[in-house]
Amino acid sequence: MSGGDGGWPVDCRQVDRCLEANLDGRLSGFERMALRQHLRTCRTCRAKVEAMRAFSASIERTLAAADGPDWHRLAPPSLPLGLQEMPAQPPLAAAPPVPPKASSRRPFPWRSMAVVSMLAALWFGAQTLWPTTEARSTTSGVTVPLAPTTPALVAEATRRAAARPADFATTDWQLARGWLAERGIVGMPELDRVPDVRLEGVTLEHLLGRRVAALELASPQGTFTLYMLPPHNGTAPALGWAEKGGLMAMAGVWDGWQAILIGSAGQLFPAALSDRLRGVVTAF
Image 1 (cartoon, helix red, strand yellow):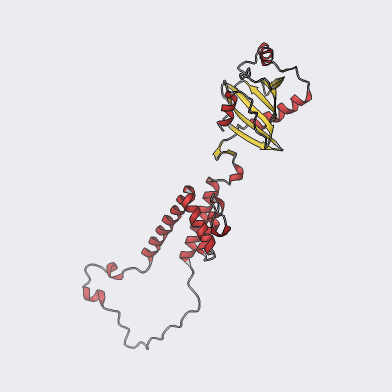
Image 2 (image 1 turned 180 degrees about the vertical axis):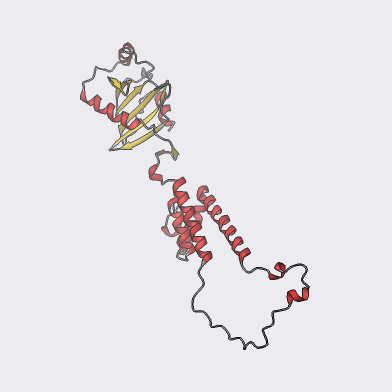
């Protein structure tokens, strides 16, 4: 994104409209300066404009080659040069030619239509290959796709966790880890050095055919829920995050487990968490 002069910003979604307006002569001076500034800073849009220019030049060369054939070159080689250059004589009995009336109809603008069609095709291709930024999930300018099953998994885990009481509540992480290990839930994070974090664990059986451990992490920054799942068929979801309804969900891989961290949107993640978890969060 970049801003233009005169307070008129240009972003990638407005470049195609500005190019069409410039073709029709409807682009103001401020808009033209803003467009040039954006093209100087945006490599993607600059490459798109260069492709348009190359395609337009190709059309111009094709049309120029089709304008008016060279009749001297089309004459048979055995025909004498004098006959090639001799104009055709009118018949003796022919009446003097009547000068044609000037036609009031303007020729159809084939070249303009070709350029407009080319721009429309490029715009459609750009919309298909480069979707709008609202459709992407980004953090710090990096696109990270969320695993397809994560939204349904988060919704079901949240519903079940709220519907039943916690199996234990303790401030001692070692006790919580032992309770999880007895139930086959291992590979949990190291939180031994975090005395101000309260842990409340809930086990959910047979969630999408897998076991889930839900830990509620309370810190001065807010309350967050961490779901840990064994890998499904040996795979885990890619890093990603989503935000909807005031909640933020992050997915990642943690010690070979699938990790989903849920918290209130707009809040910072707990700074008191261990370095390992903080490393996972900052990896986004």
